[in-house]
Structures are given as C-alpha cells and as structure tokens.
Length: 216
Image (cartoon, rainbow, N blue to C red; front, side, top):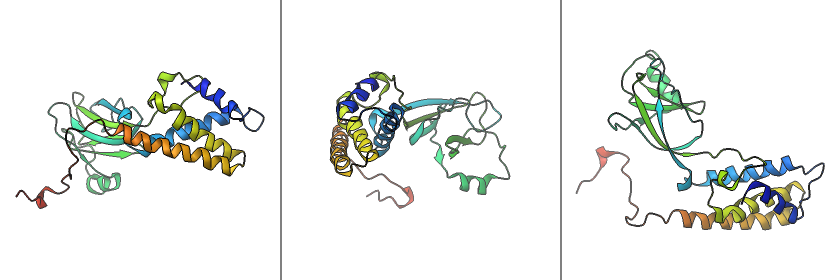
C-alpha cells in the first residue's frame, strides 16, 4: 500500500480534506504513527549495517548515515575488535585532556545523535556498525517500497494508528479509542510475528559481568 492509497482510505473513513484537516496534517499524522510504531521494538526489518570511514583527523566518520536508533554491535573492520559503548559525559570527563590521541578505535559514544569513536582512527581504519534504524520520513508520493513495514501491516498498523490521531484532531475521543485499540492490537500481533523468525535456539541470559560469571 502506498501513501496516496492511504490518503484515499482516510477520506473513505470520513476524514475529508478541508481548511483545517489538510493533506499535510494527514501526512504528519501518518508519519507520527510510522515513527511511533518503529520505536516500539528493535524490529528485524529495521536492521541495517554500515561501514564507517574516517579522514584521519577526527573521531567522527565521514559517512554517518544519520539514522541510528539502537545499536546492535560495533566492531573494527580490520580485526573484528568490539568497541565498548561510553556515554558522552563519561568520555569527556576521562579523555578531555587528550582528545587528539590517535590509534585503533577502542570505544564509541554518541554526541548530537552522531556516532564518534576513540582514539582518533587513521584514514585506513573502518568501523562496522550493525544497528536498528529510524525510517525516513514518508512523503505524499511515497511508494509501497518506501515503507519499511511488512505490507500486511500497512493497513492494520499505519492506517489505523493514523485514524486514531485524526479522530483526536477532530475531537472524537470515542472513535480515537476504537481506532487506537485496533492499532495496539495490530502492533502486538506484529511483535509476535516478527520475533518468531529465530526459533532454533532458546533465549538465554546475557552475561553482563564476566568477573561474576559462574562457570560451573
């Protein structure tokens, strides 16, 4: 389902375009629903990988994709060494006196939504990031292939969630609750659907501190 079709469906549900409920407002409501649903889980269909490159003078990459949401893994391209995550305040408190130190990256942190690594890598270094992305904004002419959600959830998730927002815009809380209930139900079904893909190994407890690990 593409965006023009969704806009037609909104009209079919009684949300005609007028001076208050413009097409732009409907599109805003659709994108709000899109991003809300995308942020609910680390969806497999939002997983992405990028190889970051550097210019040898700073610890910000030259090709930051700008769509990082949740990081899955970060490692050096040359040897697979896993970089350790740091908070930006902790980083500056510990390394503010030596920000230009060069060498193979050992840690990463986020500043202003952008990923940076330390020490400052050379121009030949690369860092591979596997992550969950934030999907790009939909436009009035976005095709079905531009929508990263599985096609079978375009109506039940994106349309119903948007209808709930449009109903609230028109001060109809009863209909908003009805549409919102269908939206939340569809999201729950999508969770069950998407996270059943890997079933050959049961979930296990991840070790947070190897010093306290019981090897018995």
